[in-house]
Amino acid sequence: MTAHSARLMPGSPAAASVMDVSPFTPSLVKAVFRDLTPMHVSRSAALAAASVTRTVLTEIMRAARKAAAEEARKKLLPRDLISAIDRNVELEVGGEWFRYSPTFKSLNGVVHDAEGVIVPSPRRSRSRRPSAVAGSHRFEAGVRKLLRSQGVTAVPAMVRDLDGIASAFLTDLARDAVMVVREGGVKRFGTVAPVMPGEPASPPLLTDSLRALSVRSGARRTVGRDDVMAATTIQLFGGDLRQRALAEARAATPQNRSAG
Image (cartoon, rainbow, N blue to C red; front, side):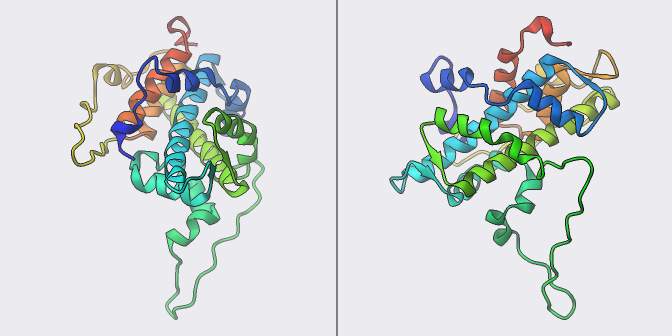
């Protein structure tokens, strides 16, 4: 799938259906932040993070749906997820889940010792704070709602992978938003801009709106909407998906609530 074919036209039925669906609630988002920090998370920040996560998951589902349609299926399988990511590098998010999921283990290879013996994966210790992997079940209801909005279903293994990616991505997004607060602004931006043959080049990476996020203002103990927006520029590559995620997050959070 190319970045051009995935683009949502403003006012289109597909765009409207995405904007109308809010599968990840502010309370769920704030629970993820609480696993990482004691900082206060504003409602506008939670809404923005929920919107960005929704946008990312919707695009993954859309690309997987296209792969399934090529085999005349409406039920998504794990191999459709692999195909979707292979076709669009922008969709490779939530890396913690890729290292955990059985779907991707065979693709990541195995480690051998000096004698050529396979080294088993390290045991996952039980942490008092739930990790993105342990907390992925919290996203199942939202993922299923989003699947229905796309007119598809998925086998349990695929639902599990989508849950995990949503949890891992939102955890990474929250972690970067907290970093933005602590460092007083964003210090780095995602810099990969995938361009497919025959497709137009992506717009310049650091637009005025992105530069505005590089210096932070506001309370140092509160995660605000703009902190989440800045974190989005870190988590997503500089292509169409990032631009759409930022635009939809702004639409989901009224301007007069951007600071809180």
